[in-house]
Image (cartoon, rainbow, N blue to C red):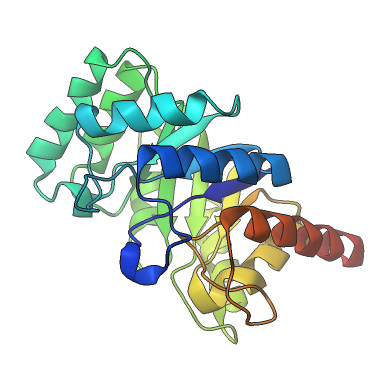
Length: 245
């Protein structure tokens, strides 16, 4: 599986190719799926470009994307979108009023309130992607979680942005995850570490992701023009890595 992460916390300063409106996200999603993406991760944004957990923001984004594609669509629940854990939990519970809810949502297990956020999502029928970041205690906390066996998948998120060391960091993170409940793992990196970690995922036969959230650049260092271009390149790199393993 190659998931496309459409935008992340990036904004207009990162380039016009980063989709910020519901219409732009839907168009980018459609192009990425046509290029081979089988799952979508998106950060719905306010008109000012800030990540939001408000149903008034999330609803139109989901509607726009689902009008164009039929693959699963997930959103973030990152603390930066709503720093107060109690307020974040209430925002997510308010998704009960949405006519169409996300198929899944990522929960960063090192963040305060992660267990409660995940439980609320499961109560809503929303799948949970357990985000386990390198350099945090997320793996330890997840291994002890009573919700571990119920998550949709684990996002093994390598925050090491060095092309020289990201693969080593990724392998260490996967080792840390071994005591955790046996759920499918999606392995990905970011910025300078994005492509080395994606190739490692190919060699290990793990799901992965790419998109403008994770990197603005192609493997040759050229600027990516779209999420679809990144997906097409990711599939080529992933396939080559699999064949060489």
